[in-house]
Image (tube, rainbow, N blue to C red):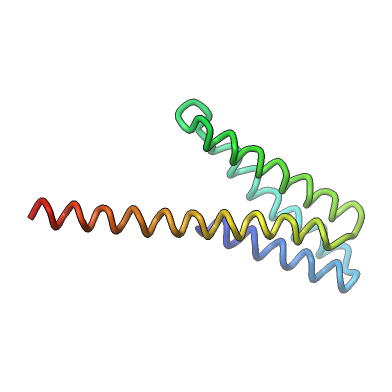
Length: 112
């Protein structure tokens, strides 16, 4: 979740910079968010991940496109689009983590 949290934070900072018309901060923050997304893309296991990795790659590509568009055109709406994707992905990973922990707890109880 750390990378998602950081990307979301950088996107929000980039959006705030656009609203302040601080082009240097806007560019810096949005590029930080893009670097995280590129890192997440690079870590996808396309062989073992099959459809999940393919779907994540599509979402990450969309986010990159939105962030680049926002930075080039000084628009906040594309950042909102990217934020929506990342917030939903983050929520999904948190829910999956919780379900995995609960399953492990149940398995430990049965084994005991």
